[in-house]
Image (tube, rainbow, N blue to C red):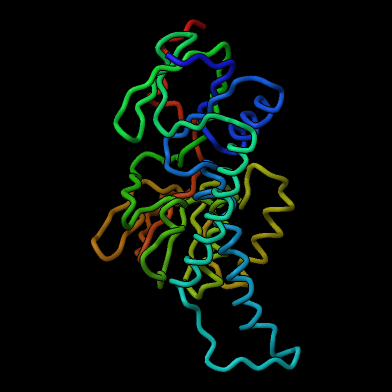
Length: 287
């Protein structure tokens, strides 16, 4: 069993920064990541790829609506969905390669696999190669991040009922998409697909968008999104979704109990995220 001063579990923005700093301070450090690439949700399926697509769709939106005012004429304007996603993938690759370089530069030992605590000082790693390793450490940092949350009656099947993760790798441009949740992830995804030319509807349980933030922000954003043609349904309680093969339906009730149904190519569930600790074996550690 190899012994370290510190083992960091999870290589997102919290984990990889902690691992680098630990190594810079002279501690023997290991970083455990269950996926093939470093960077966690933010780098691979969150902040970085969504901003890359937002940037691309911003250019497309400008070409559609603002270029003519500057005397720039664009004939036959269209969006190549495949190439747009290819660019996103290149941006992500550049970032993950950069993280690999930083790990080598700072002499952080990177192990790809799933970690589970045996006791307070030992973790067992099921590696991606099918091996089992034991690592000992004086200290551990749990930086396993989060995963998409859901609500009763709604199951993310990753086919027609999707999370933001699947939305970043769709096989085709949707004609119509319904987004459950008007928080930061929901409105960001709404902007992306709206700029692509999709028909977008946001269904939100609260009485405003960005309900956990300053009310003025939600009110201002609602005005902008409505001007862009996004439909917004507030004070609606979703109670069921159904995958119908080539489409999906979402069922919801308003505050008076009146039921409605919407059908779309995809239903995107964006009701927040929850801590990911499954399989860590925390029950094997002392409090």
